[in-house]
Amino acid sequence: SLGCRVCLSALLDFKYSSPVEHLFLLAAGVGADEMSVNGAFPANRVGAKRITVCYSAKDPIKVGFGFAELIPGVWNLRPHSILAMAAVGLRGKTPTNENGEKICYAVNCTSEVPHHSVHFYFKSQAFSNLLKSSVSHVKNLQAGENLSRL
Image (cartoon, rainbow, N blue to C red; front, side):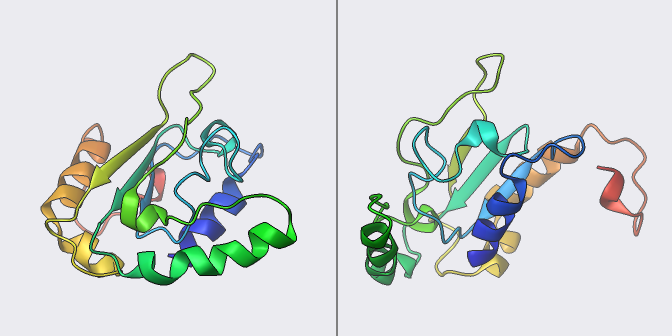
């Protein structure tokens, strides 16, 4: 949840090494429009080649998120989304990469994820399939092998 915001903050304008190949955001406690062109974390400025947001409309974060985001928005005179990415996925126009290719994708996991917890995402078939397809190019991966080279 908040870890997604920390991750996006750390990768914003990241220029120190090659970008993350595929960033997954699960139950993101981030405004649904924050990866848009005018958001705090425009997708083309995040150090990731591909970003997938997994969300669930059953996530209870949607109840209090809007109020929690309203106060900083007023203080900074910048409107914040009152919808959480964790509950609705992506909103707004997300930027493309320098080749004009789409960077951000949203996957609705509502049928398998009933709560605001990454554990439900890890157990879901939807996320399992995404993860498998993301690492399918790696050959001869042994059980227990360090995955940091991915």
